[in-house]
Image 1 (tube, rainbow, N blue to C red):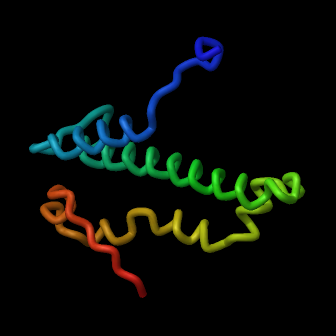
Image 2 (image 1 turned 60 degrees about the vertical axis):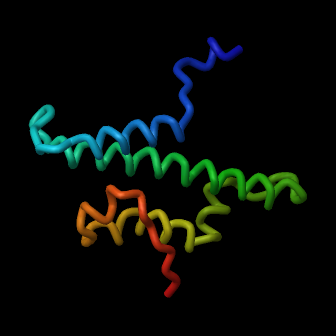
Length: 112
């Protein structure tokens, strides 16, 4: 059955690999005309976005199971606009943060 599903990969492993690759770029160089750091940073963001949607879909399944999935996932997401706001701010704090703070694996949760 797995062979029928095509290429499968463990998303967390891919995210960690992309993060490690980003951390190991000591000098910025170009890959296909794009900054290597930017390329690997965007790859990390794409993996985080996929993971985010998996978490949202899991929440949708738990929420809608009792209602026999009366609402589609797309509509459920629109009914919960805070989820789109979270996704839109995926890396907003990291745009203005010094790289040294991001690369030492230290994060602080701040609530506003």
